[in-house]
Amino acid sequence: MTPIKTIPALLCCALFCLSPLIFAQDAVLRAGDQIEIRLGGVPADEISQVTGVYTVDGDGFINMPHIGKVRAAGATQSQLQGSIETAYKSQQIYTNPSITLAVPNAARFVDVGGDVRAPQRVVFTADLTVLGAITAAGGFTEYADQGKLSLMRDGQVTVINMKEVRKDPTKDLKLKPGDKIHVPQSFW
Image 1: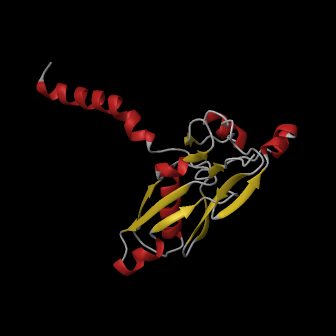
Image 2: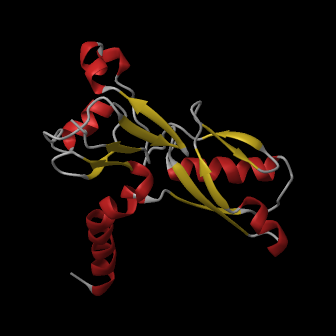
Image 3: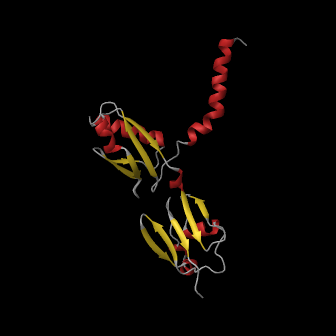
């Protein structure tokens, strides 16, 4: 093989081998995801107005300065990046914006602690419930107070009685990325 033909072959091999690493960052966004957005290609005093951390709301949107709501849920990071850039250009707010998105890994987990057998960070899935997270953390210890679990979400605490959830599975709350569950110890 000639040196000129070797280079394209090596590039194709490298792209094939590295593609899972490149595209792993292009995850499909969901409600509850936190997205770090950075703006470039605009005057320095404008950057701070857009750059920041945004949360995809329950309807699947993020609220951006100057352009309002942009659909994020169901889009990949690169699709959302393109949508935001296009919106800023089409509304003639910025002529050449450069948007960079990142989804922090912490936003894709649920923390389970307290009186469970294996306190840990549980990987978030769309169908994860409180009982599912407790089960993934090894279940309750013999000293756990199953009537007073705390679910911390967005700075608010909800008390959950798992004994009632077992009687009526419709009371098993769906979790969101970043939720924290604490199982207290009972006082017999």
